[in-house]
Length: 197
Image (cartoon, rainbow, N blue to C red; front, side):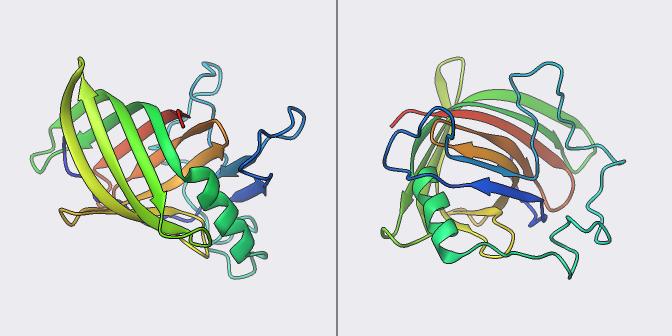
């Protein structure tokens, strides 16, 4: 799999937190939409992360890059978010990558992500990404992860030195989907995962 280098890109935040160790009531599930991602299962809501007409505008009052943006997340919110993120996730990862010669590479992988916390009150820890193509493992790499206390972006630092940022996502007790971007603008990945434990 092509190496990923990702950027810390601020996104809008809208969150509701439920007790993560219990099944949420059907009328109010745990839900964290970070950056207002589109549901990848909804064909009427395509999400084009490469849309040049939708840049982060620091003058937008809802942009975290705006100095007047209120409400950074509390430590309790970050710990709750980390608790929901913790566990094993399975689904798909679609990637678009331009190599140094400008050639486009695309792929779709069956993917497993494992997130473990350092402690019950931490919003960082260790993890493992494993990608499969046609049932054969093509990539496996451990990483450390941390939730950014200001932006709520999820930073992944792989053991081989690569740094990735999940900057637009939806996270609840059962599903996790969104966008991963590279800092050089050459790669955009879309993931759609379900919690399996």
